[in-house]
Length: 294
Image (cartoon, rainbow, N blue to C red):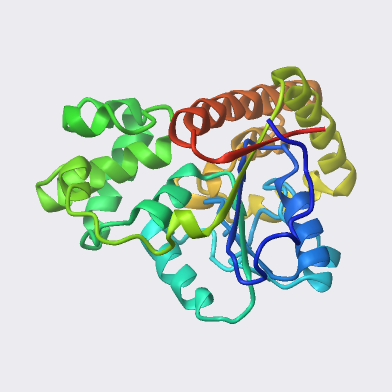
């Protein structure tokens, strides 16, 4: 595993991909590279696209965005479903820009679609999405897993409600499982062999400590006020409500849990998410360069 070293050794037009689990320092590294070597920073995190949770999702600060051009952050309304297909479409538009793309995030599916290709699946109807949301609200997302074809179940993260709902909706809407659609995957958007692909990795204890510290920093930055801003329009079925900690924050504002419970629940949920990311990255990104987290 390598430590960070000069990125200015590579061609100035070479796309840079930076992946890593939550709280690994991805955004910091992307900003450092952009300042020293040039480029625009493009988001590859499925939740950071939503505009209503800035602090909770650890989006770049307004100062960072003023210093370096950032794209695909906070540009989607919290009630709008945002798919990997839409992300790929927007990425393609940005790649026509002459600036070097520095694509950074923690959503492994986005990177997989970017460098392996993504099949064009028909849009999901509002009726199907309403049915899925109703089922989840009544019986939980686990009830959907039972109805997804086994080949798809074996390839998705069944602990990720967004991935489960997407797989169920595709099968329900098209009559074909997600795995079947993926067999028709076209040419990828980026040639992996022409990219600088970096995976930030480190000890679990280090990541856990960073998660603890980051939560306290979020509180200092105004996380509770951000939650209050979301309270009036809160709907647990909104796509942005999948942000880790959103449900707990609303529960706190409704006096259902204490501040101590709030901190503990969000930290535990974030650590669990980091573990899922770690497992996925180590399985799917074995050919990425690993950089040690300091």
